Length: 352
Image 1 (spheres, one colour):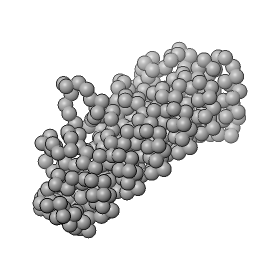
Image 2 (cartoon, helix red, strand yellow):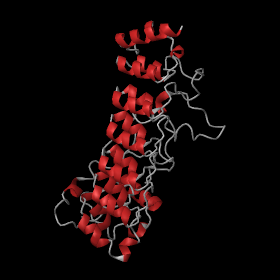
Image 3 (cartoon, one colour):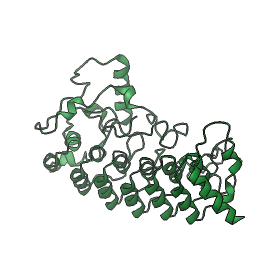
Image 4 (cartoon, helix red, strand yellow):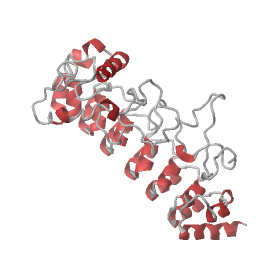
């Protein structure tokens, strides 16, 4: 699913970005469903709701605008049966979810004066504009409607309730770049690490896309900066294969995307400059040609010298990197920045 996608489809890691799709999928049978596999553009009608008096069109299954394929109907029915709180009533009244989507705060306030809507504030509904079940808070956070997010929290919306992909309201706010919503959720007590049922974290995403402002807020509220803990540090079963990749490390991903400001923030917040999944010096489990520590990754990804200086300043072990492997690479994948390599060599020479 593309990042920044609208509320119904959710936000999910892309293949080359969030913590590698080759890793385990989030808990839940629909965790790997992608929006493009469900329908082409589920948002056309919903976009027209803004400023139009807000009475949403009926759900597709009740009043379809175009015939659905048999496979499409079956998938929608399965999603409804598995994840809706009230599957038989999912199209009865979606005004609360629709108001959250378009940011209609007056309508939200009016609806939540009624006891029937108060009892449904945490309802995961397959609403008119999307197929994956979402709560009103999840929808408002994804769309970036801060006042609606704040009001829903005041009225008792469960702050860390996850959708079928394991995404919290904070996570989707971060993925869609909504700093205000992220601040509101964090101030209200949202877990800055997101949910353990999703294979990425708010910190990891912010570090990858270079949102230093959001990353700074997450750090301020105590987010784990050293590792995508959902994929590594929470693996407790000895039968599970240990991870042997740096891809779960926010510090690594910020370097891979050359996000210097995020890289600096993570180090200042205590990220391990020698991180790898099996400890700072045990590299036997890494595949040939893979970076074995953050310094190695910084050099291999052609990062500028400023990254090297930061790692040196924060105490990185310079002896973990094999310089000859960088200088005589036969794969053609290593793109070392000459200035950065020179800085590294000079610093390492002082170590020896």
